[in-house]
Amino acid sequence: MAGEYREYNYVAADTIDVSELKPLDPETKQIMKSEFSTGIKLTLFYYVFILSIPILNWYAGDFMFSRMWGGMTYSWFFTSIVAMAMAFVIALIHTTLYEKRLKNQAEQSTSPADGRRIG
Amino acid sequence: MSTFMEPKFLLTLILMGTIVYITYLTKRNATASDYFVGGRSFGWFTNGSAIGGDYLSAATFLGIAGLTYQLGYDGAYYAFCFSIGLTLLAIFVAGPLRKFGAYTVADFLAYRFHSRRARLAAVAVVLAISGFYAAPQLLGAAQILSMFFGTSYEFGIIFTCSVMIFYVGIGGMKGTTLNQALELWIRLGAFLLMVGAAIWGGLHYQDILASINEFKGTITGTAGFTTDRKDIPFDGSVWTGTGNYFPSFWQTMSMTIGLSLGTIGLPHILLRFYTNPSAKAARRSALMAIGIASAFFLFAVYLGVVGRSIFLTGEADPAVMKDLIAGGNNMVVPSTAQALGGEWLLGLVIAGAFAAVFSNLSGLFIASSGALAHDLYATFFRKNITEKERVIAGKASIIVLGVLYGILGLMVKEASIGHLVALAFTVAASTFTPIFILGIWWRGMTEKGAIAGLVLGLVSSMYMIFFKTTLPEFLQFNVPGIITVPIGFLSVYIVSKLDRRVPADVNEFMKQVHSKESEAA
Image (cartoon, rainbow over all chains, first blue to last red; front, side, top):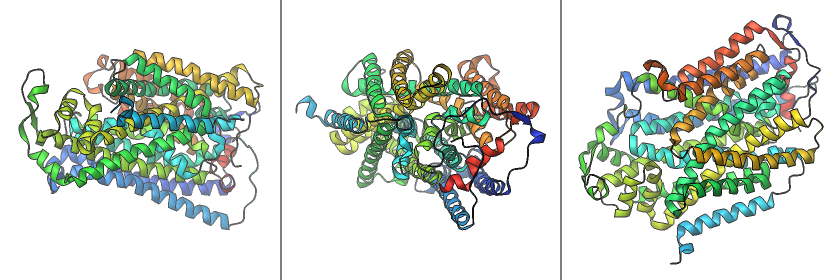
């Protein structure tokens, strides 16, 4: 099973200066880059939405606390309804893109991972 | 009706019976993997429900609606902050953490840096966060028992710790996960019934918000329950605006940062991703938990508004009005349930409240048990420990934790639940959040950097909460995330840059947690 736990020998590993660190293998580098790029874009978009709520509440309060639907204000709507949906939608996009990437990777030929088995 | 046939007794007894039955069914824990990570056998639905159960504590089940009822918009803002963290966890941590695949949170640091010191520092932080989180849950449990069954505070603490010792000690992660999943659906079911009853009763969201917003004056029918015998004044326009709890823009921002990033560092939540069979299942579990949590927060805020609306009309049963005035925030959900659906709905909510306490506490017990038995005992005192001994150590540590948390619970009788939960989130956001994000995504992180981040993050967050009044006024935050989270991240970054000594096999580590081979398997 992937990542099954094994005891690890503490003694063997040394440290090296970060300048001596070899580049990551192209495959891992590509996966990390792709994952991080997707994650950071989604996070930036999400945080712009998140932080815009308190900013607008404090600096454009007249608009945010004006009514949009019955007694519901824009601020109430975005904070307690849209934000809840947004948390799920962002995670759904991320998971969908990840599974798509995984499927594409599985279609490509692979060589078995070697080296340190820690998990 | 005999006492035990009252819905609140009956439904709570059914819950307890189910817990005992599930625990009995899952009592066989032959290996450490069975005991600490449930044999990594849980699919996304079960584990997603269990993560939801772990995350949505009693403070959330009763507290969010209560805060909305009391503070209006600022209370709803709390739910907003809590809803953010699981999504960030799903994006940056869930999948790689499962590919790493160990037993405990401290394992991550120990193997990332081959370091016993890093493991020790991580254990200290796990125990600190779990302690700060467990204390308010025990406080809440004792209060619920006292409110609904008339028991003493001390009895409540001892009873809850005893249930936990039985439930986690015997069932291990398997029993804990199944119980957490079941308990989550009891709570969500109670909320769904309440929301359905409120809508059926014509309490539409936009309409009741409008009537609350327009209310200005005194609430009729409340004088009989107040100490000064006067009706309670209320201004709806203040309630629906901001500034009731957050005195400034920066206080709001600080809480947003602290609570949203805190979830990534909660040990009992991180641990749950080890129990999936694959990284794909871990990510789906996170998605499922986010869906559950989002629905839960949406309902909780709405029910807080419903509670306020019922209270303002002054037409509720006198017992409900009395509970809403005298019972404090934690009584809002039960009182609203009673007003909407009578004794049976109240009974379900009480069972749901216990489910919330047990679910969250069991996650904290299992996370701390791993820290004591696996990270401390098996690493530092019994190097050649067998599988069986490791399981026994895990069970023994549950008893130790039951006693320790019990003492802690007795000590915090007068403390504020919100204050302690905020402390747990702030410490998590300032310690494990930088460690996991940078540890998974940045090869340049060093052992010294990690330890510096843990120590400075822990010390700064504890100081800024416990000794708030010694700081200049502009630094006195209710949730000091805006200061302590950057301290955590910068400590790791700066010390790592100065140290420069990275593990020689860090590339292999990155391959392990990111590669498609470990994924596909």
